Length: 128
Image (cartoon, one colour):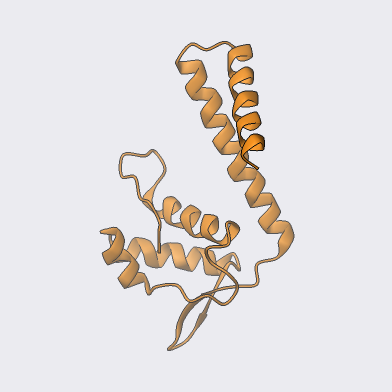
């Protein structure tokens, strides 16, 4: 699985795992009934404590995002659409907020930040 862990981040590793799995689902990299690596295997891959991965899997199971088949593994649930939409918007809002905060730290004005966002959107639209 392709989850990026940033030890220097203010976001806990536990939360980074949860966010990484949710992002993989939202972007279609993980689909309903896809099997996830065992929490031990993922811990080895990410070079982190296995208990952290197990705890993240348990939280995602509690939220109904994952389910466990005893003896078979952990799988992606049929996550309901309204929850996915809410998560998509939360991720987008967080990314935009980070961009704005970075712009402010670099002493860009509100107008300069808006202009750059608009230019980036225009470039994306031209590529389509």
